[in-house]
Image 1 (cartoon, one colour):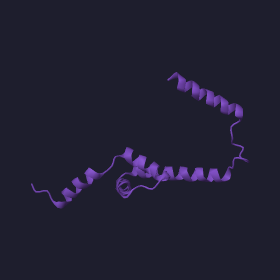
Image 2 (cartoon, rainbow, N blue to C red):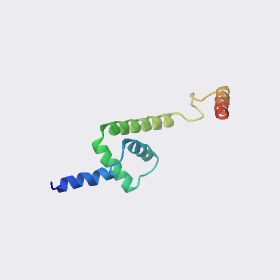
Image 3 (cartoon, rainbow, N blue to C red):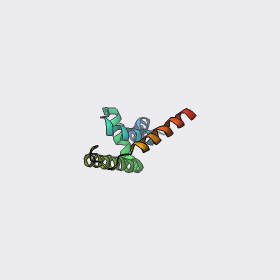
Image 4 (cartoon, helix red, strand yellow):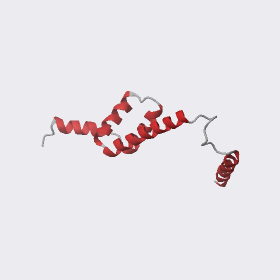
Length: 102
């Protein structure tokens, strides 16, 4: 049976498609820096076909926006959301204890 151009195109694309775990990594990475063209294109093609990754992308964008709003409204001098020095030292001790246990 002859395989037409549509079949060959599907094989071509399937070899270049990325999995959801790589797509989620690229979505997160894209928030910090610009992707090269190949990675950007692979992500774009993946997002066209995967509704779960599109949902994850929307959540990441919303989270990033929320953090930006929080940062703008909370300066270090006037922010009441800072930890006390006692709480900071307790967290530091717990982290050191956890690292030493491993």
